[in-house]
Structure formats: structure tokens, C-alpha cells
Image (cartoon, rainbow over all chains, first blue to last red; front, top):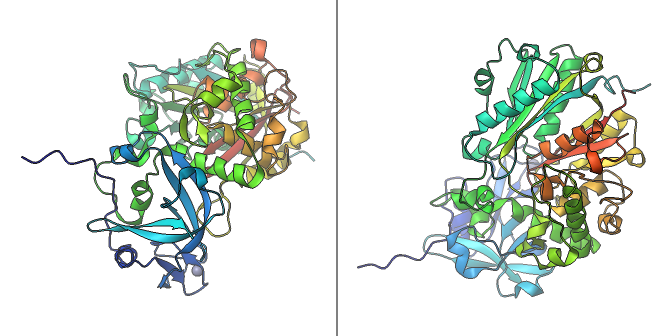
Length: 137
Length: 396
Ligand SMILES: [Zn+2]
């Protein structure tokens, strides 16, 4: 008889628009979109540039480097998939290319996290999806 | 020349249901109670009402929220203005703005603006009501799944991260945020309708559990069931109505846009700055003229950053500005005199608006303060949507 499965985190299911991002993530590459009309980079996936509304873009591999724009430490029980990890950190990373990602920091104590801290992407792999986390650079 | 909208309309009616852990009525029934009370308060009959603006709270997203069918439930016929609005916590002030604009344009004469919400269920925690993605089973689709996969849940998250950035950039500290919480609790103790009336100390504040660092429990607003309605009328009508009119001197909105966009600091630059420009210009006042503030205070931090953006102090100096307790009873800038959302009741933007009406009428009892110029604000989303009113008991 199978044991009851541990509660799962709500992992994203790649869809058509985000497929290049998640395929890149499985390969350890952080993919962003860059508008070919105005040159502004954006986090996938939007059909139009939020700066100039152009639909023209290219996928681009980001450097993976960024800084901690801000962060917090979650103590509240919201989702059972995270209960074992409480308290866990939440971080908004500003990529070198400009866009910001909501993620977590790994390889650092919560008490050592600082705004402005340089970080580098570190992919966390699950069975069929990988997520960009960040560690101190 | 004064702006033609300055003093052209007034808030003439107010209706409030019991608020808090109130059970046994639907949001629609609560809304009807508030509307009935507001109509009677204004000395009107239902047939006098020709406009209805409707704002559900979180139940507008989670189910059971009030919407357009409220008109028929109330038996209101032949309205000249009707809509369901939702710009989150900025909606209450926005409803009053659209009502005032419509009245001034001759489209309607007496407009009811109503909010009702029912986030609390008997026996369930308050936090669950605002858990957001944590409520949804299964795997979120595409990029929208990144935040919940990282454990970003609920409204608390964005504000905790915003407060953190302000603290890092400007040295804002917990003593300063705590001063806001303690001061508002003092105000709440003077209001018979506030939910949390027992005094708290700075020690209580610091010892209250973490929700999301850097926010303690006592940095966060309440969650309440209930409903509030106000009526907006033209100034010519208002002078002949039973309650002291609370005149609308100015109004403004500010919606800064995608927080993740380039070069924008959504945690510290809010829509309040843009709304302030419009509202101060219309009212012909500046921050130095404001005698009391009724500010949207979903978190202590929201109060602090809003004060900065309304020009009461410079950007980054909000912490130093509030730390002497000037917002509390006896202070030089009385703010959230009903206890606000932190300690009074959480009716989204109707919390500051209802207290502004009570104060504007001079009906604040032992908590009544100088009401010459009242700044009343609403904030929604993650500091994403902002609207405000400048109010006064004086027509000009
Ligand atoms: Zn572009």
C-alpha cells in the first residue's frame, strides 16, 4: 500500500507562451525576452513589449547575475508544500539585464541576506520543471 | 480662481453595519443594511437615489461578492448612474470621485457608494481569507506559477518586501513602524465601533509574532465582515439635508503600473505622489494645510510611505517623521483617528472614508480633532492603485 504522498509545492506547468523559458531552465539557462524594436528586456511571457508595445522580440539567455532588490522571511503557514521549510526566504532579484524575478535565495542564512547583495542564478530541478533560484555571487 | 469642483459636492449620508466577526448575513444583505442606514441618515427616501456604485471586497474575487444585482435587491428603479467597480483599496475614494463628477455634470443627484465584504467564515482563521494562490489546488500555468512556487502567498508578502526595501534604503526601523501601531490602537480605544480597543505597548508590538519579516502581526490590518455606504450629493442639496455636509474639496488618483518594470521602485514610490498633485491643486491646499489624515493603512508601512508621498516629509524620512508619535492622540498630525484598518475595522477604502465623514461632521466624540482639512486616501494592490479625497466641513 502506498504511503500518503508528502504535500507538494505548487510547481508551474509550462504553457505554450512560457515553453522557451522552462525548456531553458531545464538546460540551466535563464531565458528572457528582448524587444527588437526598443531593446528593453522583459521577463517572459508577454506577447507585447511593455515599454513600446511592439510584438517583435527575441529570446535571449540572461547572464544569470543580479542583485537582491528586496526580500522577506515567511513565517506564515499558507501552503502545506512549504510547512517543513518555515521560516523560508522570499526574494525579488533584479537581473543585470533589468527585469525582476520573484524567487528564493539558496546557500545563504536568512539572517545574512541583504538588499543589494550580488547573486547568481542556481536552477533547482524537479521531475519535469526547473526553477531559477539564486545564490550569493 | 478656485477649482470649479472645489466644494461643489458633499458627502451627505453614512451607513455602517456591525463589523468584524459578523456572521449570518450575506454580503448583499449587509450591503442593503448599510444602504438603508445611509439613506435614512441623509434624510432621503429610496426614490431620491438615482445613482448606485458598488464595490465588493475580496469576495469580489473569491465569490459571493456584491455586484450589479444589488440594484434589484434594493428595489432601486430608473437609476441614472450604475456600476460595479473594483480598483481594490482605492475603490471607495474612487466611487466618491465618480459620483461627485457625475453630480457636478448633472448626470445624477444623490449617489450611493457601497462596499460590503464577507472574508471571514465562522471558525476559520482571518489569514486564510487573503491567502491568494495558496487556496488554489493543482499546478499554476506558465510564468504565473513562479511566485507561488517560490512561496509568495497573500497580500502580506508584497508589503513585507516593500517595508524591507524602505528599511534598507532609508534606515527605517521597527520602533518607527511600531509607533504607528501603538498610536492607532490608542485612537481605537476612543472609538466605540473599533474592533481592537485594548491598548498595546511598544513591547507588545516587538513581541508580536512574525508574519513575514519584517512585518510583525501588529504591523498588519484586521480582516472584517461588514458593509459601509456613503451618499454623495450636490452642495446646493447638501445644505438642506440633516447631517453636516462634508464637502469634497479635491480628488486625485495615481496608478504607477507594473512593479517589475525597469528602473521603477514600487516599494517606495507609490501612486500617492501623483494623486496628491491633482488633489492638492483642486483643493487649493498643500500638506501644511492638512489638519488630519485618514490614510489607508493595510500595514503600518503603508501609512509611512503614504505620508512621504503626500509631502508631509521627504522621501525616506517617513520613519523619523512618525517616531515622535505625532500621528497619535495629542499629536500634531492626528491620523487614523478611528484606529484605522490596523485596530478599527477593515472595510478597504471605506475605513478611512467613514472616519473622515465622522470627523468631518464633528461627530468624533472624545477622538474629535480639528477637521478643517481632511486628507482621506485609498490604496490597493501592492501599492498599485491609489485614490484620495480632500474633505472639509467648510464649503469654501
Ligand atoms: Zn519595446
